[in-house]
Length: 237
Image: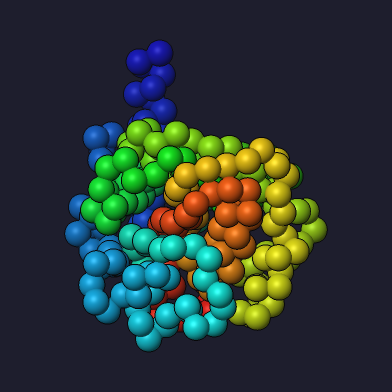
């Protein structure tokens, strides 16, 4: 098995999920990306403490925000877009470890330990999840749950089939589409504070709808953590 593993590594060497550069088995991403990815200074006064975007792109005045906060760790641009695409296509990519660790560290910095009772993920349509092989938000949520010691909660929310994908819609259309796309599929009552995981924070329509449904089920508070956010252009993906 070791010989086979080494042979496969020679044929298919591990690559940085953000740029495709060959990396060693001990690395998660290449040194250049580790030093140059656009990190979000979520503690800065320049960032809205609620939606997590730069104040020039704040979305809080465009809808009634029901989640208590959103913390994003990377700006959605350049190599980060490629990294998230890699995450979507490959559930075993080193992107899971790298992004999940960044997100867990950000949650610790912002909220401390033992701040949440459960962690869950924005759901994906079942057929699409089966076709893709995983739901990237759920994969990250499970990884973060281990790092932070938070109980993982299988989402009681479902994504309906046949509804448009959010990134193809305008801001107002996203708000309406999110109401039609997500609904409660498990009416078991909830309690406590929930950490909701998503990959990209754009207009906030999706996480806001999910937060509303979790609160309807009994959650006392919902906070969001995402891999990336559209910092300068809040209505685009």
